[in-house]
Length: 340
Image 1 (tube, rainbow, N blue to C red):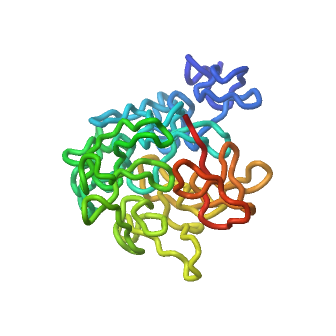
Image 2: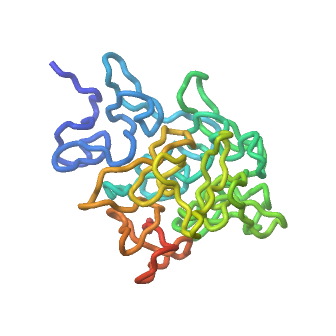
Image 3: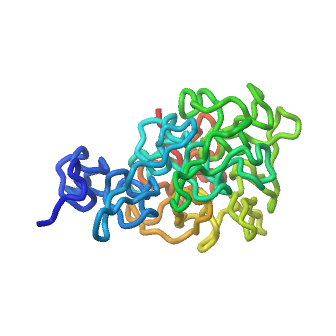
């Protein structure tokens, strides 16, 4: 007889009556479904790359269950990108918001380098990796339990908080972040912990220790927050993160189909970032339509002709508190939501 993959809960595709029946905590139309862009811990998987935790345990056959995320020295408690969440303070990215296709709150991936405690595949994926040329260069490595593992975690910085890493901030989407108040460009209450375009509190770069500056197209970066005009920060031909150039007509910079991306917000309208867990080098691809048509994912541009997906609203990019996008405005707005 067919045996249950997980004896404590129903895995993907099995019947259910309530969310609590499912390993994914998401019962949709009587069937256990996936509420995130990846399979959650305990749910069915076929390979490591399909799991939010980056590890699929297969006892026999071709299917197993997603294991717990790797552990390591960090200030994050294992709520890696894609995990279910109740508030943004628990996420390694410090950002909890609805996943567009389902409207379920998940830990959203921050753009650019991977933050403290989040998954990584190589040292170069982490904020503060050696060779970045940015403040905090060399302070962070990717810790793996075994060298052959697909993923490890970006360990706690050995010195100051590098550019792009999460940092201490109060009264944003959360009441307070649980990260250190120790940015390399200016420690303490210097004002160099700023919200990036997605609302993640991150250390920025400064030349005077008090004011954030932006990088031009082609310059090294840790996330889109570093780039002038909010341009994406994606992996270039040298394997390092660089600011993407804006189009010649002066429009908003975004990554088109088959281009490199680090998160959905890097990609143009109607595209999603296909990326392995822990990696910073994904590809913008076309996505199935939702809500009867294409919609903008979390952090992507929005306007009257480019509506947001379920659970998201169109706000002025970077506004704090969030300000609704004015009627008729075609640029400068992105899809967000407010999570207490």
